[in-house]
Amino acid sequence: MLFVLAPVFDLFRLDLNLKHFFFLGMHWTLGLDDFVAGKIDVTQAAINIVLRGGLPILGTIALGAWVSWKYGRLYCGWLCPHFSVVETVNQLMRRTIGRQSLWDRHALSEKNADGTITRANPFYWPVLLALVVAFAFVWAIVLLTYLLPPTEIYGNLWHGTLTRNQGVFLGVGTVAFFVEFMFARHLFCRYACAVGLFQSIAWMGNRKAMVIGFNRRRVDECVDCNSACDNICPMRLNPRKIKRLIFTCTQCGQCASACSQVQIDNPNGSLLKWVERECALDKSARDFGHHDGIPDDCYGQDQKK
Ligand code: SF4
Ligand code: SF4
Image 1 (cartoon, rainbow, N blue to C red):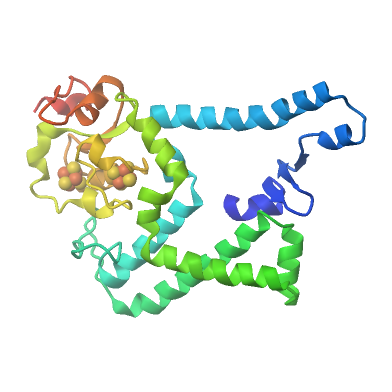
Image 2 (image 1 turned 135 degrees about the vertical axis):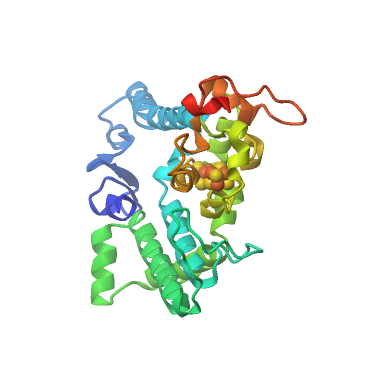
């Protein structure tokens, strides 16, 4: 909703007509019009560029790098509009074909973490296709409103008076987003998104960063489980594996929630939980035969087993 409404309320957008950004309802310019009009000198213009352009951009990058270094891809799992589409389409695709992705080799277990059953039903195909088309169309429109005034775009759409270029943008954008949402949404998150890659690299640089930890001391308790954590993962990862192999984890926490449901009657609780600092090393430093083991108290009273 924020992604859709941000341009409408001028929370954030670029206006190609005015050639500057809007931020929190205000015009965000570099203040160079005053320089062109001779109202400020070159020093003041340079200060404006640094304060209004350089600092906000560098500050945003620094904040993003710090959050990712410490907590991983939080933006992906909790804020990114693309990931919302990934999760929604995944769930409907599972209802339709029994898999979260067309590229998954095997059907997932019909049994959910909470014990309920979800059977694949091809009846959902029209619903799935309609949803993906709707997502693609809305995304194309919203993207356009990040570049041109939303009142103009929505007004033209309502009255059927889109310009040729606007119509072409919406048509091409809808087709491109449809293909991406349908066939390549995970691939985009894993390999093509610069924001995601940037966060993953920062995260990998900190071995003590927050990560989904696996209490391997209790690994035998997984025996009766149908790998509910693997089945639920929207990024199609195996959350019990080492950090390098879940490089694209979006910290959505769905695997830990699934395990909590599977182990609901187990007084020791979930085997998966977010850990950090020394407790994260079993996940991040365990590789190529090296493993430090799990320090005591990382998983609470259940750990001793
Ligand atoms: S491994 Fe867990 S936290 Fe990471 S993306 Fe998969 S379900 Fe989400
Ligand atoms: S970690 Fe939890 S959800 Fe995953 S296989 Fe083991 S018991 Fe099942």
